[in-house]
Image 1 (cartoon, rainbow, N blue to C red):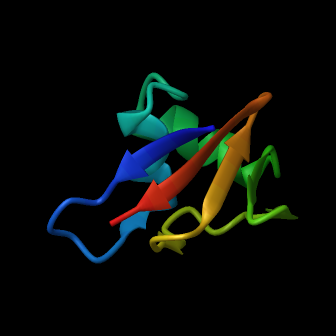
Image 2 (cartoon, one colour):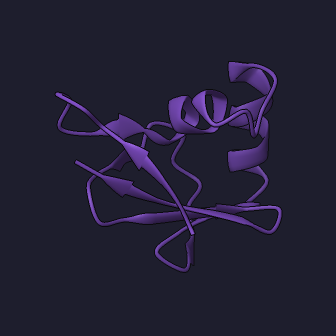
Length: 70
């Protein structure tokens, strides 16, 4: 499973994570995907665009999974 490092940050917004990982071409595309219920956080559908993702959480979209680490 892939990981995403927060570095010095405490969290990352879900829509930003999708852009940074290349899962969406733009912020608007990421927001549309999240609104459509196509993204899960820790196995549950997440529809909040700015949901804060913290270390230890796992995000999945279109068969891809990533775990956020500090």
